[in-house]
Image (cartoon, rainbow, N blue to C red; front, side, top):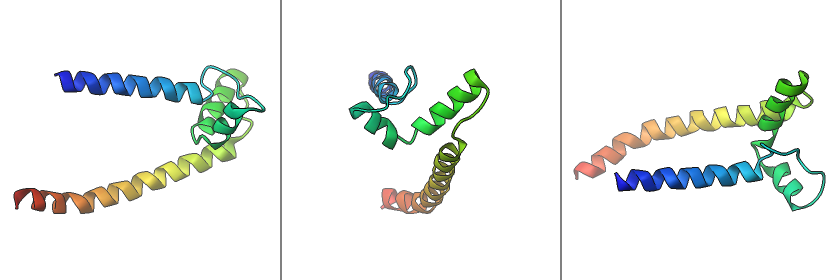
Length: 96
């Protein structure tokens, strides 16, 4: 039980840090280090497009959000295929 509590605390800490570098509670700045981090952060287009649709009703930049979603979906598919191929090999090595 202690191990799972440690994992829960680590996940909470990481999520808080991720929330600080992603424009969840603030508007993306135009210049500075935080602007550079937000420019390269793949979650920024998703957060901004969801916020625009929710509060303004019009989405200003759907293309980056679609690109990030597509790359995420392709990564999911490739990861799933690699996982399905690796599990039998992993189980075979555990038994040896």
